[in-house]
Every structure is written in structure tokens, then in C-alpha cells.
Length: 370
Image (cartoon, one colour):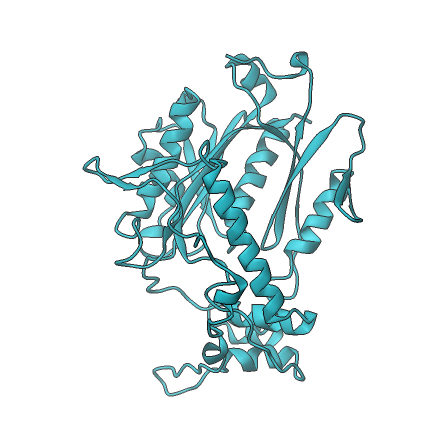
């Protein structure tokens, strides 16, 4: 089996995902994808005629985000027309799934150069976007599917996770983001976005909120209590079940405690990212330095009524596939099957995960460098 090497990765800054407020909201989604594809090409002196495929992830494939965004963005970026493109949807795990699929193609020896990535503009009006299950009533009876925020509240209730614990975690996350930004830890990967007329649209993170504390978060009202009881009325006068009723269809005794709000939930943002994955032979022949090697990937589903539980079992599954273990003591530790020192990069989203190893190797083991 061939090695899949991560050569480079970059992303746009995260813009606030609201029309009239976010610095990227006026741009076309393909423009954001084009920005990171241009950066991948230019930073690595990449001959785009060598690109075997571009695999893109976009969850809401409606309106301007429809029509194979990955392929269109590559054409917009001036890539060779032989560089094919495809766009997939695995909800929140779409982007990481593209990385997995790109790695699979290289590890199987079928392709040498694949670019994975994704774009999501949450500011874009989602006219025509269907609810979970796309109004398939038979499926909804088998697996009632609710609203993501209401599902998060249901999970917190089932697991006994308090509002205070969530707020403390959110405040700590904001604190770490502030430190990372001040120390320039994202500078290597962050790509400024320019308007078509050449003026700057955004060159810094717009979403993180420096100075956030658990005390300031405690003042915010829960976001999903009203949404939980929303009942849609169709044109024929029929009424749908509320999001709360859909969860109670599966968990009849669950009294949902609404603990999530705008300050401890995932951000509503616009952005795009891309990652260049090549075979070892291609990297060596073109003087590309590998940043990491993909060790394993894994997928796993979970209860669709709760929607958000799969990352943990997916992460455990990919560790097992990689021959690694995750131990808990006073500090988190990882046990590796080989003696070489390594850092595990473990990414889990929705129902899929990737493990990459950044090894301390001798120069003779590394792909040739320019």
C-alpha cells in the first residue's frame, strides 16, 4: 500500500455567516474555493495538469453552492481542464470525508495528486433546502430526525452535561483561540480573500470573540427551546411534528434541558479550505516536503435521532485501525505501535475520522526537498 502524504493545507479566514454583517457574505461560494485552490497551486509550484482529482465537500448544495462546486471552483482558479472535480455531502463531515477519499485514492495507488477541501457559506439563503429526511414520512417513522441544536440539547440532557460545563468549555476554547491567533499559529495556513476588483475582503478571523468568559456566556438565553416546539403547516393544511416530538418519539421520557446558545454552539461562518495529498513518489520527484502521513481513516454511524454522537466512536475506530490506543491518566497519552516518536493528528467530524502521523524521521526517510 502506498503512503498518502499531506503536503500542504490552507483555509480562508472565518467570516461571520450573516448577510450584511460578514465580510465574505457578498462573495460567490466558488470564489472562496477558488482562493484556497489558487493558494495550493502557487505555494507548491503545482502543475495542475498533474492533479488527478479535486474532491470537495459542501453540505447545503442548493442555490450558488450547487452544481459541483469543486469542479467549478477549479475552473475559476485557472486549473488545467484535465483536473477533474467532484462534490459530496456528508453533512458536517463533508470536508473531512473528502480528505479520507483523497487519501484512499493515493494509498490504493490509483492516483498521485489529489486535492481535498470544502466550502460552506452559512450566510447564503438556503431556499429549496429540504429538512432532514427530505420529507420521507416512512423514514421519519423509522428514524425520526430533528433539528441539530435540539439534538445537541437532548444529548446534553441524556449525558448529564450541564450549562455551566458547556459555558466553561466554550470560554476555554475562545481563550485558546485568542492565544493561537496572537502567537501566529494560524498564519501559515490562513489565506486572505480578495474581491474581484482586487480590494481586500478579509485577512483575519472574524468569528472568534476574544475576552469571552463563562460569566459573560451565562447571561445568554438558550437558543433552541422555541425552535424545539416549532410546528410546520404545509400548504394542504397538514401539520408536522415538532422537533421536540420527533425526539420524544424515540425517547418518550426525555425532558430536554436546553443548555446550548450562541456562545457555546458551533459558529455560523463562511469559509473554505483545501489540502494537498500526494504519493511519496510524486513528492520526491517534485521536491515537495511532507507535513504528515495519513495512517488510517474510519467511518461510523450512530443514532440519527440524536444526530451528533458519531465522532467519538469514529475516533476510537480510526485509532484501532491505526494500531494506536488512547489512554487517560493525569495527562492524555497515545501509545504507538512503533518505536519512532510521532504526533497523532486525529480529526473527527459527524461520522468520519482521519488519523495522520507526523513522524520524527531521518532526512533519508523524507521525500526530497527543494
